Length: 108
Image (cartoon, rainbow, N blue to C red):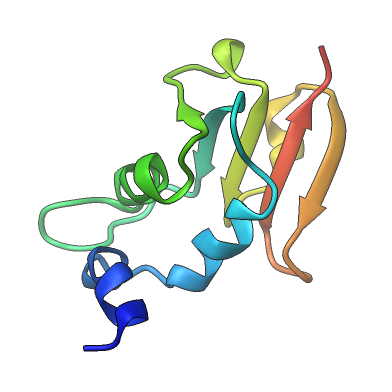
């Protein structure tokens, strides 16, 4: 296996595309507290999509930290959802093309 394949094996074994996490990683970092907004969906027999995305994000997006509630977060990582549905104001937002994948900074 190539180094890249070894590094992304866990992500791909869950059926998720590693390139999305590489894209997110460009916009999150130290001091970010991430809330994951993920479209509810089954992914496999043992894990659903929201849990898989957050699980991968916990290590792929280090040193950012995952939090359990939107009120604790300063950044929202969105996977195939519209962040406007959360009803919070944002300071800035990055979007992956026309797809519904965002990194949104919460206005404090």
